[in-house]
Length: 340
Ligand SMILES: NC(=O)c1ccc[n+]([C@@H]2O[C@H](COP(=O)([O-])OP(=O)(O)OC[C@H]3O[C@@H](n4cnc5c(N)ncnc54)[C@H](OP(=O)(O)O)[C@@H]3O)[C@@H](O)[C@H]2O)c1
Image (cartoon, rainbow, N blue to C red; front, side, top):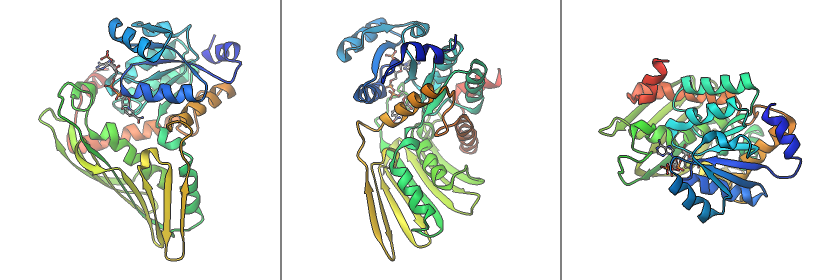
C-alpha cells in the first residue's frame, strides 16, 4: 500500500510523524521547525548507535536506529540530512518502500543521481521534494509582485553572495570531495536559486571561474550568467572568504535589497519615485514553510510539489554539472554515475 494511504489512515490529524536521516547541524533546525508547528519527530537514523543514542536523549527523540528501513512503519515522511554524497543512497530505498521524502539541497550530487531519485519517486508514486526552503519563503511573493507590477522597471541584474570563511577540516562535508564538498553545492545553489526565482528560468549561458582546493573542490566561485529575457546575474559563493550574504535585484528604475536572501524575512524596495519595505518574520525558523508544503502535498495526494517540482531539481542539477565541468570539479560520485 503506498505511504500516502498510510498517511491518511494514521495521519488523520493536524500533525505529521517525521523520521530524520542524519543528526548533524541541520537536523536540529528541522526538528525545531517541525515541532514548532506541532509535528513530531519519531525516529532518527544514523551510522553509529552510540552517537544516535546521545542525540535521541539530548533532543528527546523516542527512537533511534542504524537501519534506514526501520522508518517504514514508524513515520509519515522522512527528512534526509546527511552529506550530499549520501542523499541518493538514503532516498532511493525509502522511496522504494513508499516513504515520502524531503531531501536536503542539493537533491543529489549530479543530474544522473537526481534522475534516478525522480524515476524512483515516479515509479513508486511516492512524494519527493528537494528541501530548497528559500523557494517557500513568503517574502518572495512580495518581491515577485513588486517586479510584476513594474515597480523597479525591467530587471537587468541579480546580484547574490553567499560566502563565509570556514576552518579547513579536510574530512568535513564542506571540504571533502568524497562527500561532494565545495561552495557551489553547499551555498552557490542558493545564489542560483535567487536568480532562478527572479528570472523564472535557468540561464541560457554562463561563465564561471573558481579557486579550487588541493583536493579539487571549489573554495571560491564566481558566476556571470545571462537569462532568456536578457537580464544578467553576478553570483559569488565561498567557503574560504567572507563574501557576505546579500541579494539584490536591480531594475531599470529601482532596486530591491534582500538581506540574508536565502533565509529572507525582509526586502527593501527603492526607486526614483518610492521606497517600500516588507518584513515577514519566520513563524519558527523558516523551515516551517517547506514542512507545511510537504503536509499539504501529502494531504492532497500529490507526489510532487509545484513550489519545488522535480523538473526544477533536475534542471538545477544539470546547471551545476555544467558549472562544475567549466571549473573542473569532479567528484567520486560522478565516476560512479558514469559507470552506472
Ligand atoms: N537548508 C539549509 O539551510 C542547510 C544548512 C546546512 C546544511 N544543509 C544540508 O544538510 C545536509 C547535512 O548538512 P549538516 O550541516 O547537517 O551536516 P553535518 O553537521 O556534517 O551532519 C551530517 C550528518 O550526516 C551523517 N552522515 C551519514 N553518512 C555520512 C558520511 N558518509 N559522512 C559524514 N557524515 C555522514 C553524520 O552522522 P555520523 O555521526 O554518523 O557522522 C551526521 O549526522 C547537507 O546536504 C547540507 O547541504 C542545509
